[in-house]
Image (cartoon, rainbow, N blue to C red; front, top):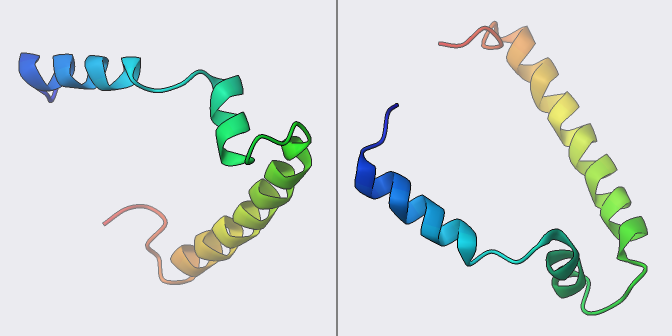
Length: 66
């Protein structure tokens, strides 16, 4: 709705260049099969940071948008 025809097509082509999920995980793990535990640790740490940011935004009354 907010992007023209060219931008939509460029995004579609860019998505074709992206690997599938299994290949992506293998590449970021350095070829190790047990990367799911490391990814889970990373996601949990990221969730903690997001929770802290949400509290910060709520305290400043920024959680409803500008």
